[in-house]
Length: 416
Image: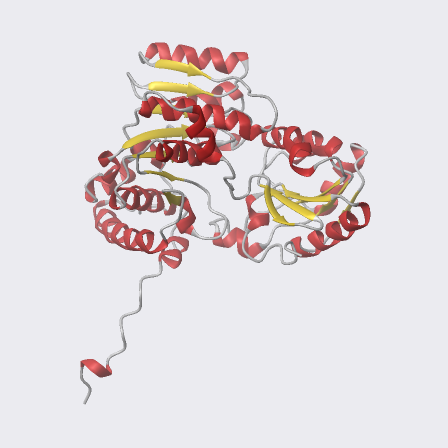
């Protein structure tokens, strides 16, 4: 005979396992599932002001900076980000930090709501990104934020984040990425991203090509939106991101104090954006994964790495423009070690079966660019080879090409 004391305790809810178990993309594109899920939760994203951040590159940095600037001006602020590097809870930042326990609680509530929504859907289910996004909205609401920057996942028009009623939209940049979903030209991609612009709101733009800038202006005029344009601030790409973020924060704040804004982002560490992983030798990591991102990285590298030689560790997904990326980086690197991407990281991030460029093929591309290269069987081995070269030459190691290179355990040895 057993009693309550003999029963196994209820297992705690594991948000990471829950999210990793879901399908990344639904077979039917659209916002219907997300709207149903939002309604089931009471539309938490309507309880605070939102600024929607779309674009090819710079979204996470700009989103973090917007939240920090608003916080520095006396408001409780947060942001919803994607993707993450190690934990799903990284995707929600409130007052500058993670709240993993609150996020897990909100994922559990959102999963329960998703189960009710799934019962009403005809053969569909709420996707991984939809549940994660709705849980992020709920976490921000439960934390009592007054304003949040919401980073779009993919594109804009059909993205789950397009369920907010934003007071402003930020278009950080436009480049060729995710062309299989968004279009083959910068203009087609911009149309998808500008589709989130709400009538009568404010559009903030970062540096754009003349063609895309004209499209942004026309879209703003058509929807009776004010447009605030920010050009390149010179120097590192984060200086331009700061200028864009301050302009976006001003849409909520009205006016900003430059000294408060600068102090808010001073010393800010943005994971995977020229992030310092180790010293002696200096090891930097940047998640640039398209030619535009690689170009911005190359322009900022000397400021972060100094004048010494830079030795690259690069791995690239097969659906990315590796030749274009390497062409942008070649002149900034002394040599590079190419590697594949870890299967466990691809699977954990919802990309099981995804392929990476073969290191040998990347090496052939590098030869055509007069860039010395070698290959390694794993990211950890590649990092170790690059560290030895950097130590001998008094240089820096740069790990780049994919978010997956920064997955937990992928780069054992990067920290020295």
